[in-house]
Length: 188
Image 1 (tube, rainbow, N blue to C red):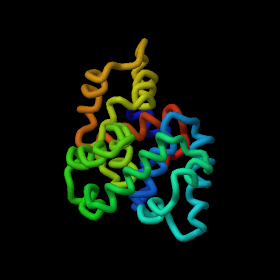
Image 2 (cartoon, rainbow, N blue to C red):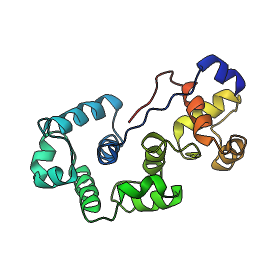
Image 3 (cartoon, rainbow, N blue to C red):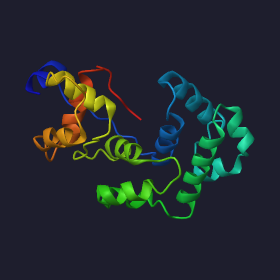
């Protein structure tokens, strides 16, 4: 890992405090190519004509309007559920900086279409938590395989064992591991 750090340089993690939009983009990007996700996300933002993406504005749109920009019926349902959870206080975004990771993951996974991986990415990229080890992340597994010359992708137990060495800075270890596969800085 020391070699990776020397090669890559300083740790950089940008923060996006527009929690609602970050989660919408995470939903939009599920199970589609990065290019398709970017295109649909851009159309999603443009539909609001510069007035900003908010739960209220999303709720005011019909399902058909959201489908016209390229969202699947399922993703429309997910984004609408996310909006409801923000509006009814189920997701209390103003409290998130003070909540434990497990509490945030539990809150977010209560939304249709948001699983543990999406919640972990939110912790990393929106809250800049430094102690997140996304054990199920394919990029992390592939990077560990490369760094440690493994024959196969590591099992979750092996990822956890390697991540213990990074404690309490698992996010930093994960970030550097990702950089071995893609030198571009990821942001949400």
